[in-house]
Image 1 (cartoon, one colour):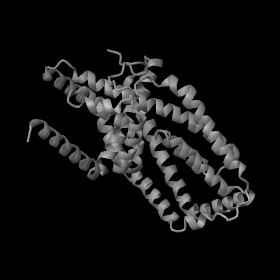
Image 2 (image 1 turned 180 degrees about the horizontal axis):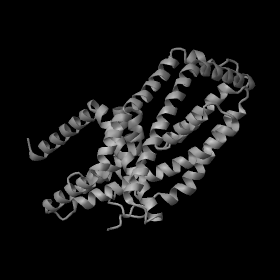
Image 3 (image 1 turned 90 degrees about the vertical axis):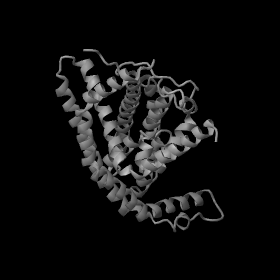
Image 4 (image 1 turned 45 degrees about the vertical axis):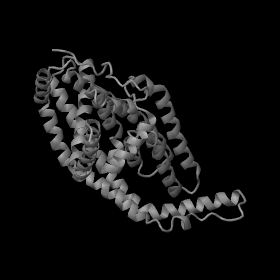
Length: 355
């Protein structure tokens, strides 16, 4: 076996072993990655506050931001669990209501053969599917304590980790600085998480106004769910507009409320995505759209819904880490949109001021 063949075999074996570790240790790794993302969000909030209130004590701002983020996550998970429990009970009624609407539409179109949605979905156990979703939410709720523990250790050990990276960078003796590379990767992930959070809050707040105006039941649940779905590219907002519209069909006798909810969310998402999002997002998300879809499938198959939620930041991390090493740069080229992966320029609010 030649050295090239041996290198390929080692790469394939290493990739397979890495995927196996990601899958079998997902119960430990998912809370760790979520805690890391929350810590990045806290750093972004602290940096924004520091730019506007430079005299505020850094430790006090950091503690306040951490408490707000963790409290918001806990409250959101609680509302999701309560809302999912209601979805379990309403699942069969939803299928019947949609079937009735489809039949009325068929009659209006003068179809010769009536469409029976219940017959098409008869083999689907709706309560079982809803129960699985409820179990996923409850699993995240039970893992909240582990997330908080990781979160505290990440924030407390940040300075020690920085010193470790600096020592590794100085001892490597290479032309590239490992510390600079880590800072660039962290800044890129921070930009993505911050922008998705801000735009997600805008979409969720405007959509909540529409749902409350229409009178949709459990509107807080749909608002939080839509905010989380905004982190899933391409399909998140679409799913977040269809599902509450379907439950509006169940609640109301007429269909215009569902149309208003679906259309309102789509209009809000279009305005935010085309007018506001480009102004906030720096040119750092250099990921091919096909690679994004593959990332959603890959991380979703490994870690479920949480994997889809974390697909883009994890792919950004992998792409930039591969771009750092010459041997793996081809992977970054395949993942990038323009075929020229490079580290992003640090822009506000990501600029780290030296003491």
